[in-house]
Image (cartoon, rainbow, N blue to C red; front, top):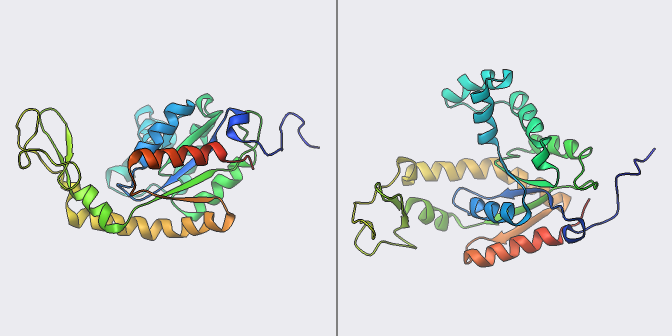
Amino acid sequence: MTDSSVSTKTTTVRELGAPGPIILLGAPGAGKGTQAMTIAARYGIPQVSTGDILRINVARGTELGKKADPIMKQGGLVSDDLMLPMVQERLKQPDCRRGYILDGFPRTVGQAQWLEKFLETATFGGVRMGPVVISIEVSYNQLLQRLTGRRSCPVDGKIYNVYFQPPQNNEHCDICGSQLVQRKDDKEEVISERLKSYERMTLPLVDYYGKQGRLRRLNGERPVDEVTAETLAIVEGAAAA
């Protein structure tokens, strides 16, 4: 018997008032965080980060958090048998009823398949909806410049980029004049490995959603306001599945 309270008609976010689940894909430095904040503010939905989920479970001393804590301290990857129940618990919270933005999840095809099954029984505003998947694409060289070019002021925290938004005075803060610093994880050798790791892990995921017809690709090298406008247009025009 079909649940009469759940609509199955094609409904846009404008009609429904609920954006449903949104997945942002993109390498480090692609601009996912900026777009996620904009979407969250516009629709009043949370940005759900697997990193935050893990930290909260560890801080609260949940059974899953206790098992994940030593793995995290050793720098290991938390297995799906621990991670997925924590994600499920988070996505069932009241603030996720109209939708959410997934940050750092799914990372693998296996996780994507788990999410697909989870969404089979989830509703948003009374409607079952598949995920809107947006891939923000930026060239390897552009990503390197975005990440290795970052500098910050140790006094006031202001962020610069020596390639795109350089300080006026040779790597000194425009505000206080302090010498700017580069984080250790922004060194080229570290960034290069992060980008290669992301590509190895994410290409199968891009292919998976591409074959489903869900993937929407964005040129992330354009001005931020243009990327934001297209991102919101995709979310607005997405149909319930």
